[in-house]
Image 1 (cartoon, one colour):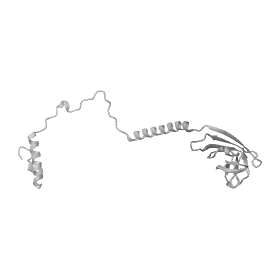
Image 2 (cartoon, rainbow, N blue to C red; image 1 turned 120 degrees about the vertical axis):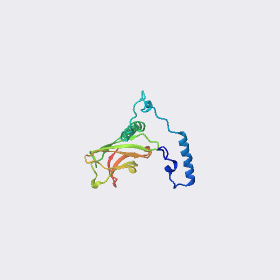
Image 3 (tube, one colour; image 1 turned 90 degrees about the vertical axis):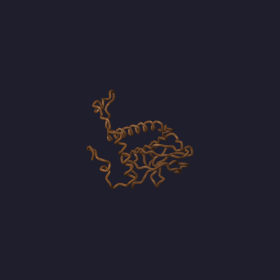
Image 4 (cartoon, rainbow, N blue to C red; image 1 turned 135 degrees about the vertical axis):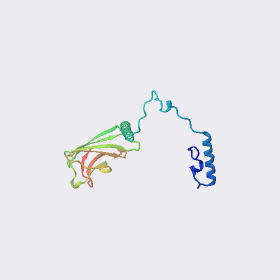
Length: 194
């Protein structure tokens, strides 16, 4: 050791490949020739303040996730509100139904909405005074032709209080039929008719 600075052999040791030793020796000699790095002035020992800039806020994943969730919910709500206004069909007709001798106190109405692009007539059937069918059977809404059941528009269960509102569909040309009727499933006895 000369003057307190370790020599090259003391730094790398003796058990090193000759080619690697030669490469490291060249790098060592270049560093020694360059000399020590200049001292940092006291003025630059601490960074100067940056005027007009706010401190950088730390990233908080929980806040970012909450903000993303709130934005997604808001976008969904806006989409539903706007989409409903654009896709709500208008009412084409409201058809009244009355009970027959088999269901004298029952009434119903069918709100038929505008024909959709595929040729379906979406509708909502509202019934009053028609309690649950015996033996848990369903009620059915039919279109008739020549006093016969022709096309089924849908089935439904009645509430215990006798009121029911249910969406249905008629993918038929309505002009080809005579009336609408409600029967119990498996029966042709008409309970309500137009």
